[in-house]
Length: 181
Image (tube, rainbow, N blue to C red):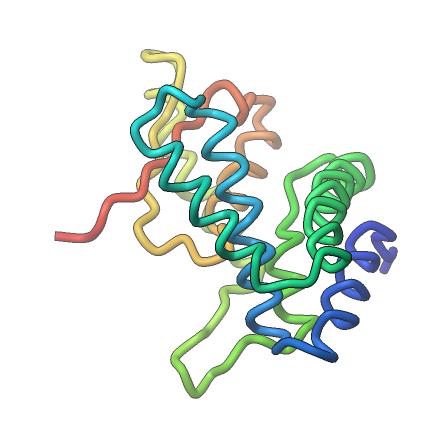
């Protein structure tokens, strides 16, 4: 199995920071900071949530020393490169963050955390897409409701199934998070 050098770099940076902070907190802060950046860059400064997210970003980053703070944007850039690297080698979306989560040994079966293997998610995506191809032909897109996405492996499995059928998941897949019930 090929190693992703960008994913390895993120792993080593988190492990280095975990000498001072808990590995769990570093990973959670890394994901949170990235999500806040993405949300604010999409929403723009006129969004009512922008200021709240910016404050949360600065508070989270403020837990770390100035030299350590510089590592988080670097890890985010490495995450983008890791995703691109996987697309280049597998020609399919890959769960880079989920792999990091497991490599850092953050999963815990005693807390009820069970992760569906990617090959099972891929199979489920192929089965689910069979019913959805007609919707894509009619509307030009399909909506996938995923209320407990975890690391997103089910979404990635569905996207991979679309890729197998020469469908463009970037343009034809809308994923929503709706609670059951």
